[in-house]
Image (cartoon, rainbow, N blue to C red; front, side, top):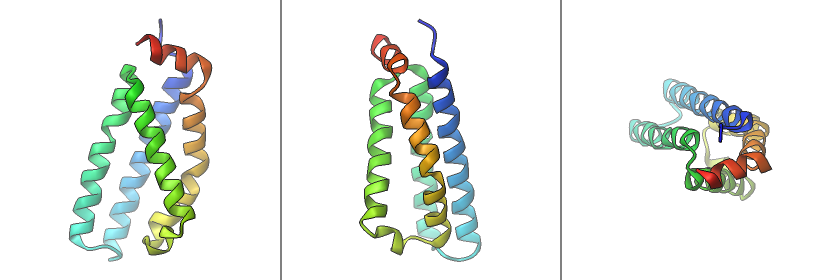
Length: 120
């Protein structure tokens, strides 16, 4: 079975959010809102998260669920007020990317996408 267009669109969206997050981390470091240790930690996390779109593109159902869990955790932390502790750049980006993330989740869990992941 050929990969559905919805999965391809979701993967492109994930890469876009990763790139925007990396840029936000660089800006945050440049303006001095985070320390070098926090910067390195964030870059390592971005590197690890970069595995997910690759694995999703390969048909990994586990990677699809891991992405959903990461999204849910980020939303819960934001709603719980942890966003107040975040650098302003990260908080703004998080709020702006919520619609994009919802689009990605929608595309990954459409019936045609789900069938493709199960068959892989």
